[in-house]
Length: 251
Length: 264
Image (cartoon, rainbow over the protein chains, first blue to last red):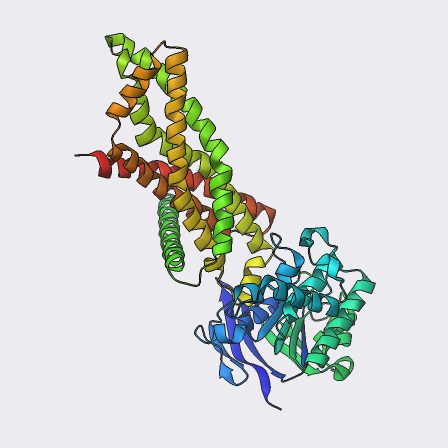
């Protein structure tokens, strides 16, 4: 199977701090890859490198076989969808304007009515009714904001979707709902997904494959079913949430 | 030996400051070039531009109007007091007009708008940075410079001259009210004197200054907001830096522009 996202030897330093040392990772087309790892191990930076928000110092990133560079980035971005940790909804715009942002501002703009109709469709898909469309993000609960963020990420039926800690800050029931939605959307759209999370329930619910990043390198990679029998002490400590083990609790 | 270390430390701290200053000047120059290039290159966002014009221009009217009104009045009192020392009270109308139009209208208006607009632009963009809304814009195929920076810079550059012009009229009116009401000037003579001495060049130079100040106000707000640090503290620092740097740059540019426009 061809890799949709392919990272080879990606490294990034911020001043003296080497966040990514050597990330080599491959996400097959149509699969859901979840990246786990402690805080500050480079998960978010990896994601930002693939999105083109951070330029790596070394290494190569290929999307669908083509190298990701400053010039090609704009072309790829239209095939991406991204759900941010805090939702990152534009608070000066209503919910439907957030969801339809691409259709109102990109090339091939839609009229207000058409864009709103599309937004309402996508909001329904994530379990929100049409009456939230005209509200502002600040008027919604955390779980609803996350769903709006999800609707915005999938609004243009992207081929690749990124999820940055989709369940952080949500109650367990809402987290379950979001996990289910993420899994459904990825399966239904046939999209390739890359998720970063700390939440092991989330990992088991949405992953086909799992990669663990530790100290800027991929420590372990395998299918979600192999995760419990990985034989790697770092992975074991992380998935069972033990305070003692090879990963120092205080970083 | 300890003296040598102390000297080395002192020189190193000077070096660090100079390098940091050069880096800031470089970063600001790059940001300015990016902002200007996106103002002149399509695609543009007319809706966003209109919203900013309203926020920066229209909603600054009361602040600028009040500043001009009281400044014009105070100016009339001061010039009358100063002029009376050598029997030159009659210069009040013309000096109030020239003072307001050339100098106080654009500068005080600029400083007031800097307080209002630079702060709000910096706080808004810094919050967007902290909450990842700027990254979200990029992932939605929208260039943040084009969507956030260009409309604000263009709106402020165009709105400030209009605000200054309105401020000029209100300031002259403030002088007129005090002149006629408190200093017993004849209303017709006051207005006649004002229009006789005021030239188009005076007004135009004030408007040029105002446009430059508008550009500075929005640019400083955007720059500090865009490069804000993390958390509430980062947003607070960005806001303070935006207002302080905009005010200082306005005063410095005012001197340079006055040199350039009037030193003949």
